Image (cartoon, rainbow, N blue to C red; front, side, top):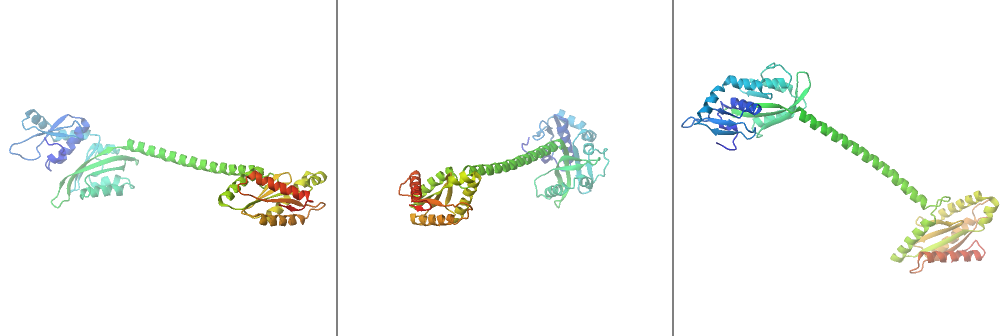
Length: 395
């Protein structure tokens, strides 16, 4: 008994076609044992037994002294082998490359919906039924094997049936004889119907693709919604930090920025100044002309202030008619000069029946001074300006 050798390696070239067909039939018919002729001539005639317990683990046993098995084999003649091949559902083929003749068992034809032996017994019959999309790859695999560039021939492809539909098959072949020049003399193989398996795989792939597309679509939609929510959140945050009437920073935003600027000034030892501003005699304007005019006055004052300040400065409405200007990296001297320019600009602003003036208080942050303390000193300077007669700047 030889372990690990292919069955056909134990047979002579003349025996390989019948042995291949026989083993295929046995594996399909689940016949337990049979005997085949000896692979070589030894000093005495030997017989071998083939066990079909497992298609991939066939075993050949020496049965030289096993007379009953030798007698059983005598009944397994060519007619019986032909009968077995007629019963096998797989498509068995036997190609004589020297003559071009290809034998195909009935299972080959029936698999494709043709009557038995209805097509020409040539290799072109096989080539003509291969799906055009699969043809190049199949030919490459076949050519690589017969020219010994590949260790085996196995391919999965679609074959055209008689009704025009296509059937997925698995095709395997084995060269059993070569000519003296190394070219193929004979090759045998088998077709196996794998259509259901391939269709199941393709269906699963389509479902996966559909699922991936759905996930991508949902991901894109979630991303879009998230962007919209982020924009809305940013807008809400901005509105929460802006005065609804004048659209400048509100008191919440002022306190937040002032804290940040005080920390920065402390960390980098930079100057920081504040200007507290109040519209003079604003209440009489509201009382005489109404709140609509009063609101318009506040908006006009803010527009004027925004043209006077720098990009890094922060203008905020502290409440009512009082505003605060945060001036990073600004000394008391520079802040005072800016306050005076603002006062002069507002004084010259056309206002119709009434005059608009500002009182301004300026303060520079002291070392280790808290934001609230700085704010209080600027506010105190503002009240000193008002006490001095309004329309002025105090430090």
